[in-house]
Length: 316
Image (tube, rainbow, N blue to C red; front, side):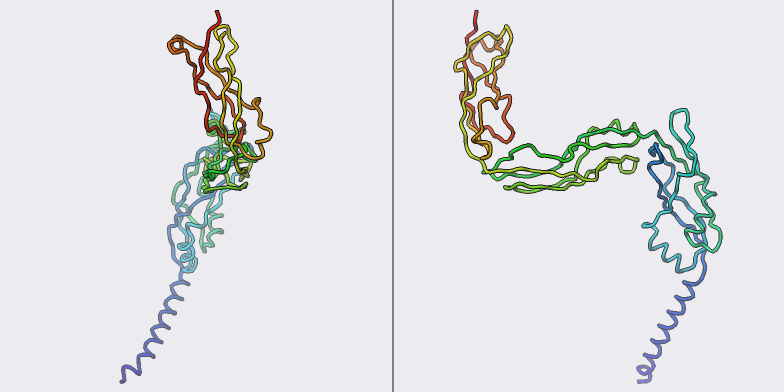
């Protein structure tokens, strides 16, 4: 019974002692070696960053317990900013513009940034090195990484429309020369049966190498319509060369197609291109040439071509 009566008093004093201990610990100053991540510009005037020696510096600083606790909690979320605008770029024999920064020069700025009670001493490295290259620009196409399925009764009226279909990239020439297109982010649109519009972000292939893209995103348009079946007679084109002087039997083919409703009424044989190759010795054995579909209007889908092969007679 006496223990039960004294337990609340004991717990109260224990809680109070913990609070006092925390206050003392958090108000005490400690000297610690901190790993400080750096942030810096990837572009300076007409130059782009191509190499840097370090992304972290180690420094001794005196901080109160509250500051140290805050630093431990946020150290991966905050970076010490380096600025190159007031530094002179020196060009070496290889054509790179170099910057050397003795880390001792950062002591004053680090002291203010960390709110240290004494001057911060940088332990390592003793020098930071950065190399820049003249910035170049180049226009490249945009490649949409769009996955979709069409309902069997629908057709894509035109090719996938990308606006803008090309962008300007800028950065170091050694990297710019390796880029031929820019991808969009991936998107699976699933099955579609109506017109769809998407806004997709562009993927920077080298985000940490000073590469900049003129646009952040592009618009993607898929124009879809219900389809109907159409049949069309199309003449077969013969290559216009002396070795291809021949007569075809038949000289036209029947194309069975699926076309969007909007294209059905205006469909014409002139919109299609069908041909055969010049015969060689292998064709002479069975006197047949394979029909080749050279061009179909955008939005049409070939179902069947009849006949697939035609006979020929060479003119003497």
